[in-house]
Length: 108
Length: 123
Image (cartoon, rainbow over all chains, first blue to last red):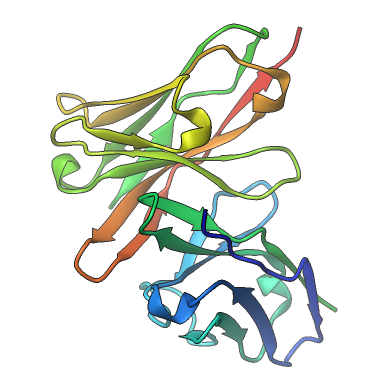
């Protein structure tokens, strides 16, 4: 089955740019979504269709997807952005969602 | 506004069954499919399956196929997840999510999520 791989953790200083990657075979041929999850909360969609932001998501969140890698970029990272981030795509072979293992973003 | 409100936490014994509900409001229930995702303590997100709220057709992840049933009640705009033969490693938070789907482009994602339901399986 299709697999997505994320780094387990990423650290960034406040105000700097955070990049979280998601690897999958020919991932650029699929749409990717990104979710933010803070402790005790439900996942929140922050990016869909590779690079689109839902209403209410700050402009500092952006996404890209090409080749085997999708990237979530947070520009001017704020302390409030500290959370777990999950990438997700659709596996056409099994008609199912696939999640990456998640990346813990630490802002310090 | 779109809202997904799930039923409360439950404690179950191994071998038992559980039925979790997710009541929706603020949109046309039959227009969107719904997905269930679970998250074990300290672990990542795991897709369990999807249900077509218009005709009750469902597609389950292979891992759960023999002990899960998803249903939809259009009269109350509510979906249900039943998981049978519970094991201790089924202890998790279960989330429902509204699915945005475009089969032509292959775009599938959850735009609104319920608050989660904690199911604890313990003897």
